[in-house]
Length: 431
Ligand SMILES: NC(=O)C1=CN([C@@H]2O[C@H](COP(=O)(O)OP(=O)(O)OC[C@H]3O[C@@H](n4cnc5c(N)ncnc54)[C@H](O)[C@@H]3O)[C@@H](O)[C@H]2O)C=CC1
Ligand SMILES: O=C(CO)COP(=O)(O)O
Image 1 (tube, rainbow, N blue to C red):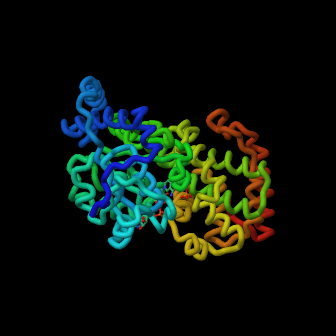
Image 2 (cartoon, rainbow, N blue to C red):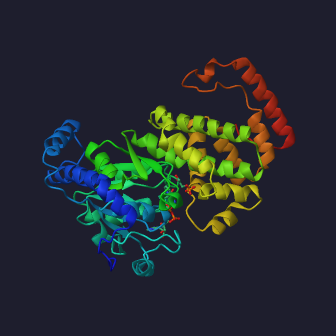
Image 3 (tube, rainbow, N blue to C red):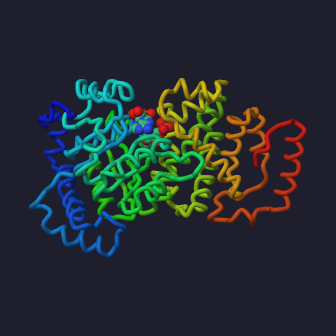
């Protein structure tokens, strides 16, 4: 089913963009690159970087004379899938948004809004809607997946029979339950031949719908795919930066949800700015520590997908994870908070996965363990926070000065005294 109105009507904003020719021109330029790369078989299999470079160089010359539109599918009719599909349609890409519920699709075609997740925001006339998964993904250049992490594997398996040469980009900021798998791991497992990337950054969907300037990161080993995603989504309101650290970018998006919950909870306790700064900065230390163990580059966490997204979600009530934390801080149970939210908050699962993985592998993640103790072991938040504050001496940025070089004797002494305090008060066992 498609939108009844594909008449390419333009708003005044779109006309001014087209006049400058920026998005459309970039789109056609780079669309040609991916189109040719896809046709020639590059981009279908594991890419050979030199082949990619020569394909890009070879094709740059005649791209102006033969513009083509990127054909895109976005899977997932929640707030983020809808917001991103809307950006792509507005940039002139041939864009289909797949939504699993047939009635929702009918309503979206009729109203050109996503009433449940983005009420009040009119979507671009050119955006098409479908509940037919096969038709949505066939003959596309790129399939963007924006379903919750817990539904990612199932979605990939469902599209697997229809994958011929399409590239896949994950927009999901979750972690699979019990397997610790990130979405890129699942893509490699389910569709080992596919060309893929992940996109992540400070991208609160509502702000994007309001045309508030935002930026994101596309991470992929494939240069044509990075260019194509930049071409598809880049505009005067939305900048798309590139990275080849897939693991680092993806982990930034998933891990920050843990700390958005912590910050929402801290806000409920009315903490000061010093405290918020401490949580945010130590959260970043945990994220990069965990990232390094997973093979990511710690410097990636200094970018948009790391500190950028951490800042956005830790300081805004638009973040669902922050709102969950805030409800918990006000005394609600986790089940009641999740029910009240009624939308995806990936951090609820990610805390459990990361707590378990870090415990198993001995990765020092004190904030995550503390949050786990409060949410899942029913420990008193203030006691846990006090215990965190009393933990031993550490170095600030461990990539500058390894924490082993701190005063080890004093750290051990502090640990002994804080362990005995915790034992006496019946507090937590968090590190
Ligand atoms: N909303 C935001 O501001 C941003 C969200 N994200 C990420 O995007 C992902 C999706 O989140 P949202 O769109 O915000 O979620 P949402 O809660 O707004 O909507 C989730 C959507 O997924 C659909 N869905 C659930 N299970 C499904 C399944 N098994 N098969 C197909 N569809 C299914 C639901 O019907 C709903 O349309 C999450 O990983 C989130 O972290 C990333 C950046 C920003
Ligand atoms: O990832 C997001 C913004 O970058 C959205 O955060 P929430 O999932 O917490 O709403």
